[in-house]
Length: 95
Image (cartoon, rainbow, N blue to C red; front, side, top):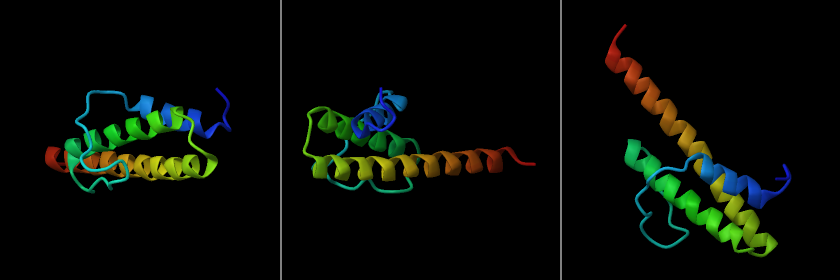
């Protein structure tokens, strides 16, 4: 897989999060709400899978760029959700 291949990068991001997930509600471009813990991660994962599938279908360059931007934003949100969960877990365990 080429490092510069945006389709491959997006598909790899989605496969990195490969686990059972509920379907994202709304149309394909619906925003995934923030701050929802495990359910939030499931929704993000489902959306990343949708983005990867659309990229696999070979959209035009403009649409591919749009899909990759959305995937990148979602990946950032996954990182934020994981950090939030780790902070909560350490707070709950005490000193």
